[in-house]
Length: 215
Image (cartoon, rainbow, N blue to C red; front, side):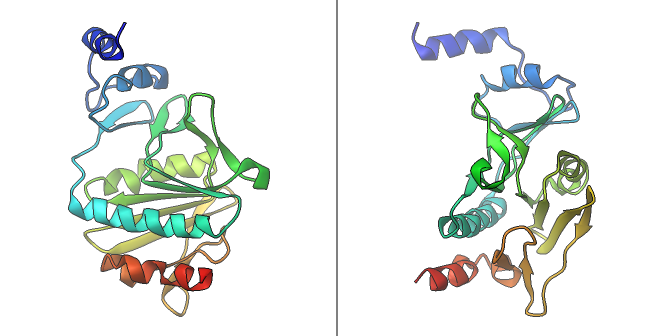
């Protein structure tokens, strides 16, 4: 049977995902699989439908993906992923905007499972918050903390405010910028972010330290 016809039949027999609906992760994935034109997350068993991604979110996310990618490109054994589904537990499945993680052979605690999903505890998760900051700073923070994600970064794009936490004794502790005004990871050596440049969406300035050192 042609793939398009099969997908149409599956879609016709499954109810669409609905905001606020309570589902198991298995049922969430089954119904999400046939809805390729939407973005949804399952947080503690509740479905949340994403708002349309507009310019401010997309532009900030692009800068952060490039920043994480530039670091991964010059750091062997480090991987970057963008908007990948992350199976946290049986009641939660998120799609963080950016993930930076060590490969398992380099001591990383996250991996890609047989279904192509992210599982385990990646070293750094990044979210861009525009309309989603209540979830990003609330329920998601608690989920990432509980999952053992070592660092969690939330960029509030409209307020141009940085939030960055590091896991200590199973609890998140907020980080602060260094004397030069740079925000630096405690997990990835040399991973620092110029927040002023990020606020300007100045991708060249954000990437300059990596491009200079690479040259």
